[in-house]
Image (tube, rainbow, N blue to C red; front, side, top):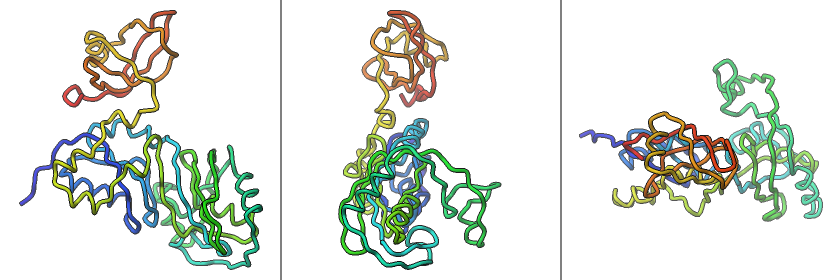
Length: 305
């Protein structure tokens, strides 16, 4: 007997295991929570593991804050071997001798910090004329890709043992750690590819908050629901503003309330009504020393607030 899906709202922090696509992970999560709508906030490759925030219902309205957020990873590199995909899903294309020491590795990692341009790999979900690049790559085709601006905020050695290098990194959105691993291998003069990749953080979320599908499935339904975080957790980096019942209603009705405000600058804010009720995201423009104007950017539906 088919169960009726529910209009569930919240954020599940899933610890995805290897050999599972992000889309499949979302599908399993929807089934286990018997939810109508769900989507993830940034694809993890099937071979990768770790933090995959999944937005249910109204929470999807605020998923862009995770898509744009910095992300942390722990990556394991096999030095001395280059693969066709930059990871274990491809074929080994080249083997070279490895002659590195900790000091040299540290020097190479330091050189890769900061703002830079990165060319996305052919084995990626980016599309050319509607066709994912990885499908073209499987046909032996290679097309030009526009470089993208990225920023490597942190890059640290966890362990260097023989031909295996484990690193922790924190990067901007759009960064391909596989490409970063290949760059490290080239600068070390031996080549490298990823043998493991684990996302450890996304925005303000940490892998230690996440739960696996296996653990989720073992819980009773009420406990599964209890794991969901509130939608405003996705935008926790934004400042908070409290509104009166009158101004909250005006904002929800599409008006631009003029409010007393002298505690911050213009920009995006998390807006709350009475009793700490999350209304959504609003753009605030300071219009005077003690006045500001609010415009709704993305709001919860009144029924879900």
